[in-house]
Length: 336
Image (cartoon, rainbow, N blue to C red; front, side, top):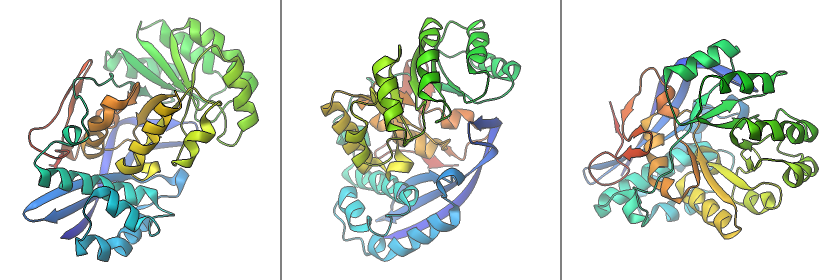
């Protein structure tokens, strides 16, 4: 078995701004596993907020290389467990490896990943399309570029309600809002009633991840459901979010891949919480992997490749109400 790492640049259609960063190009790391004439692909984007760089991801993968290339692991779950100490400080690198392992493993089984997981690919919620922070005029312009039934609006400015009011004038689409930890509990509660009137479906991570007392207040008094993102990174966070959030947004790159992501989603369902998976502006490699587990979800944010001016891979195609998977077994994405 052979492990290879490729570093790629993903150019964005527009400068992408959220509450704590802006970017025009997203750097990403691709893992390729080859064995018996087959290969599997995985991906993780870099992220300065979480301290994840191509250098430290590559170093972590190099450390895991002897275990991976020995090829004695019987399943992606087994490989994940065997390597978890190596990746304890770098779940992003483990995600890229885990996705590649699932792709290769299911190709060897001769089945698509969703079939192996016994999921129905016709039962996938429509992804939202993300509108990053910009001038209100620019946000309206970006929204008009793509007529979509659900928009996720990034907020975290000193005029957030004004932004949503203005965007609402231009579409009847459902809104989801993501404040990326930028609000106080009082703000979130106060904003929620009007946001509900503006046809906002839910608020994602309105407070800082450690403001548990504030989230308890928001959970009890918000007019809208609240979904955890930064507060729900790893498996142990799911139970901590119960009673503070109505649902969780699992990011595979932050969790460490599909293997722990599935456990998080099933745990949330067990607790009666809503389930969502979000992306980190991945190419079609990472987005196609998300699509395979999307039948498990109430909501999905897998628009990463749609935000690119040029993709590096082929994979799923997404239109409102329908996801079309690539032919063949495995996850199915291919580098262009």
